[in-house]
Amino acid sequence: MLKKTAIALVSATTLLPLAAAQAADYKIDSENQHAFIQFKISHLGYSYILGTFDDFTGSFSYDPESPEDSSANVTVDVTSLDTAHAERDKHILSADFLNASEYPQATFKSTGFETTGEGEGELSGELTLHGQTQPITVDVEHIGGGEDPWGGYRQGFEGSTTLELADYGIDMSKFPEAMRQLELYMTFEGVRQ
Image (tube, rainbow, N blue to C red; front, side, top):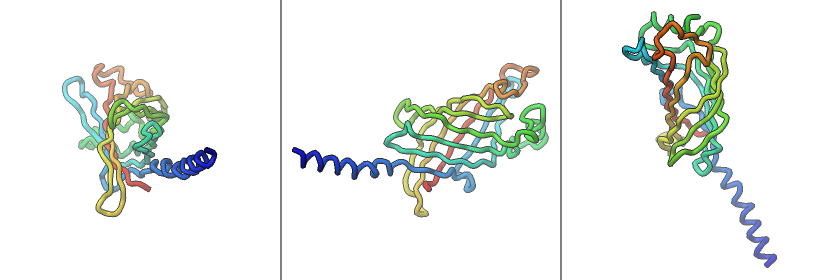
C-alpha cells in the first residue's frame, strides 16, 4: 500500500510541470499587421466615424486548460489615431478630446478573466486613457491557435467593449448623447515566446 502511494505521488509530481507547461506567453504581432485596434463613434447621431490606432504593443498569457489564468497588457500610441481624414484626426487628438500632447499613451492591464462559454469569456482590467484609469470588461472570443508556417506557434483572439467617454474626463456634454460612447474592437494574433 505504501509502495503504491509513493508511486502515485512520484507520478503526480512528475506530471505537475507538464500541466504548468501548458501556460504560455505570447507577444502580440502588431508589427506584421496581425493585430488591430479599431473604434466606432457616432457622428451627431446621423452616421459613424470609424478609426484605428495603428501603433501599439502588447502581450498576453494563455493556457487553454486554465483560461481563467489568462492575462493581457497593451500599450497604445494615442497619436497613431487614424480616421482617414487628417484634419479630423488633428481635432480628435487636440485638447478638445484626447489631448494627445499631454496624454500620448493609453494602457490596458488585465485583472482577471471569467469564462462565459466555449472559447468565450470576459477579460476585466484597468484602462488608462486621457490620464484617467477606470475598470472595464472586454468580451473576448478565442479565434484559434496552432503552428504557423515559420516554425512558431500562435493564438488569436478578438474582443470588444464600450467606453463612456465622460469616465475618462473627455467632455462630450455639448454633443448629442449618441456621441458620448465609443465602441472598441480588437483582434490580436500572438506569437508564443
